Amino acid sequence: MASISCNKNAIFSFLLLSIFLSVSVIKVCEAQARPPTVRGLSYTFYTKTCPNLKSIVRTELKRVFKKDIAQAAGLLRLHFHDCFVQGCDGSVLLDGSASGPSEKDAPPNLTLRAEAFRIIERIRGLLEKSCGRVVSCSDITALAARDSVFLSGGPDYEIPLGRRDGLTFASREVTLDNLPPPSSNTTTILNSLATKNLDPTDVVSLSGGHTIGISHCSSFTNRLYPSQDPVMDKTFGKNLRLTCPTDTTDNTTVLDIRSPNVFDNRYYVDLMNRQGLFTSDQDLYTDKRTRNIVTSFAINQTLFFEKFVFAMLKMGQLSVLTGNQGEIRANCSVRNANSNSFLSSVVENVAQEFIEM
Image (cartoon, rainbow, N blue to C red; front, side, top):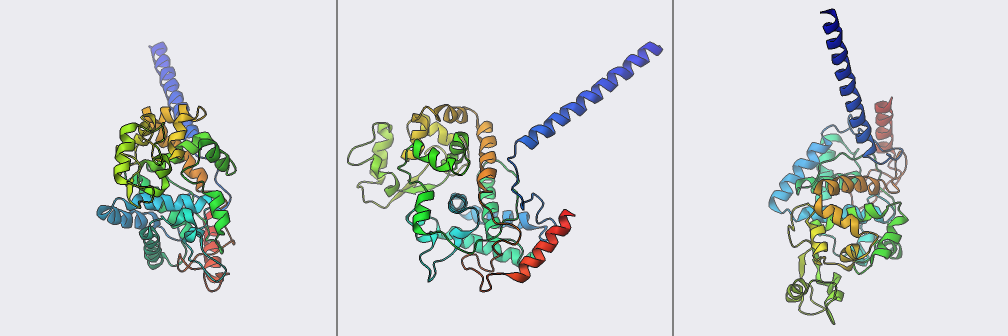
């Protein structure tokens, strides 16, 4: 009997050890699923200074998307265009000034949705009413992009916060240099994003953001006129010419013909069927360096979601301002009159130091 009891104890101990090791492995895998967090950012940054931050943002966006789910794509694109040009500092939100035209006025940003800017400012007002001026416009933009993905059917994930708002906007030339046009091929896209430490898997993953949204004809008529791109599916091209009957038509069409308002992996199915809208999209399947990544995402949505989140976390930390850098804007489209933003900086920094103690 004693022997049986010892065996049971041994088995029980073994099971406990196995469970512990399994949980440990899961935790390690979860830790590895996130890229390193930039110094100054934190997943708990506003826990004490604005505890209802995430619920306020999500509640407002649920209200917005209930009326118009198309706004989700506009907010996601806004975050992309902010981060790719001089980092995720909210500079894309700034209006022009005496120093020159803003990033908004550069050609790649002329089709950013005007309503997206208004939504960000409206959320900023809600947060200031609840917490005071402690949440940056760049953090709001990042959170809005995250919730746009989730509320349109994509993965739900946490992002590090603590970005500060930039004091300047990029010039037209810098904006153009950092936002490759949709007519770009894969080599151009890979080379451009490699300078931001984004690898081919990141590039293909982030391109999946085109699973929602619309495009103006001008972004792809180079594939229709004077003759149709032979890579493009003939029926797909014929239908596009109905929407864009000339190379100067200013109509719009969806980016993903299979599920235009749902964040899923159908965009990659489009590419495999030669129904990608932009050259920069379709060439990801044509180019042997990225073709297998496209295929893997087309057949495995879970894998796409995992890689998309990882790439978004990397992109969302590009050249961020933290600590005493930048400011917390009182209006997302205008730099504070007192550029030092002394009072809000001191309050926020002291609060964060207290949280990290």
